[in-house]
Image 1: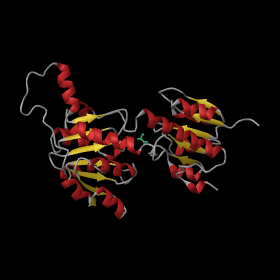
Image 2: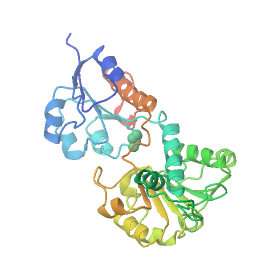
Image 3: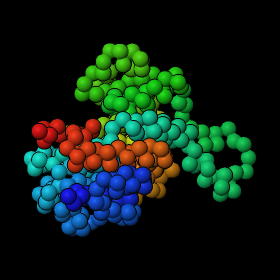
Image 4: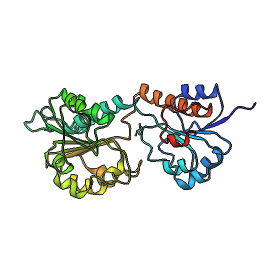
Length: 325
Ligand code: DGY
């Protein structure tokens, strides 16, 4: 019997490729560029599974043109790049990689918060430039982290992991979420649930931990930024479109808020021109989950999800269980 076929759309860690090659016929696009839409559709033909990445935009029209694909295994916890309801309607299973990246992403969110508050990129550039002449009372003065108020928008796995780090800095923790967290978790984290407006008014640091959906698109826009303190810092490691980037650039330029640390952008890899020119915008190229160990685990987890589905076993991280009969 001929082996089932699987498409990997872009470079992943090699152990995942080897694992799949041991079981299936693998079409591996091992490049950084990945596949364009037409190439993707062409190469997916005859494949039972696709290991995709967040740069693969798998909307309803693309899914409608897939022939024989039973499972899309996305190498990310976020899956806004896949139209899951459209996949469900076509009986295509969709999986993601939750859990394995929680702590690494929380490490990075807190790193970004600290780097932004204490102006590390500016300090680094300043010393490298040779401009450092003397000790000055207000040289690169930043904002205190210890004892400050952290406002978490979203208290899921990653938001809670950020709160645990903040506890070590004696921060007061506020959160808003559509659902109240279990009392035990609130107690463990010392976190208080408040409304969005109160969170924005009270927080010294606002950190975003929500998925991108129709409801969370531009959750932070001009009106929300105007509620924040002029000393406040916004941290985004969730998805770019959760923030209205043009409104944020204006708020940073006019000092409506003090600074922002951003790992994600509205039209990656494009970054709003104004943000590129501002010292109070600390920017990173969507690397919050990028430790070697975690990205390797994510690659492997997606491979295992794809393999399970092709072998008739319900994948561990199935997003649309209704397709599994
Ligand atoms: C995700 O997993 O959704 C991140 O954005 C990439 O790790």
